[in-house]
Image (tube, rainbow, N blue to C red):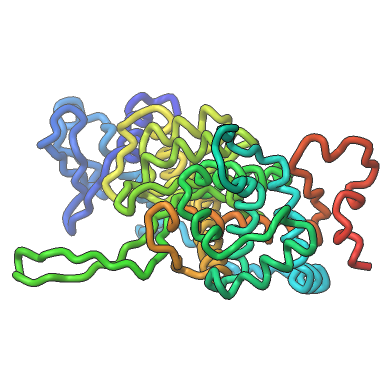
Length: 422
């Protein structure tokens, strides 16, 4: 492509929206935003000064030709060449023996993994002069919170399972119902749960390099009253927890999570989620829907050495420049390939669906802190179930702490339940 007009026509076709009328094509001017030129491809005419005065084939004619490729035959007939994609449904076979064994032993194995994950948590400092019983250890608090959520019952009804966990050595001391309620109300456990979610996903860093980002809500039994001034009536609105996550597209493990207020915008959460994922994983691709389409988000993925596959809005032009413009050109001229990678984003929808189907789409807690901690426990339990499944299918070693590998030749010696299958 040595013709400068042809090159500029390619840019116009990529960055501008061309409108087709029954008589001609309307191509926007590059110098005046309120001006358009009428292009007739059949007659090879354009109303721009370049074509009218010099008679050259202008950049607007090239732009229309790039937009719609036309083939004129010897007999005068015209064929419009358009891209048509035939989609073949792909099915993936399930490793049923591995799946069945993972599901049948999940509850016991999850307790072992959860105990190993929380055993190195530090306890907060305590004033030596303070009287009264010693507080529960942090590892016991986090274990009981997550295991209660995994059981899917109220605090009182889950006491039997928590007592059994104490008898098996997963808890250092018994925990009462009142204490369990207090754990969920403690805001100090929120950052700990977030860190444990990232730590629980770390064993899968050898598998996951492609990630998807989205948000979803978890309902509650809390309702807020608000007055509708327009209609003069009082209405009730359900309080819910909006959760932003990044997940791997192969195993659906959650690598990063942010929970803010229920009206927090999606796009500003993209960069923090990518940065948190990058701490543990190598990021090659990140896909997201059009709510995350911004120059800063594309640049962040590029800084990680990856490629962003984010949907573009209908009025997008790529005029922002930088990585946004490069991605937009890629989308315009390699749409099938771009959309193939973009549709990996559907895995984040599957992740939310799996969490809600397995651990409930609502929370039982009443306060904001407890609701947040309960959702984080759901995600933590989801990660552990993903890890159990990948232990069976991929042979992933469930190692969370560096000291686990000391003197261990076979990782199966780390957790006795890995030898159950045989």
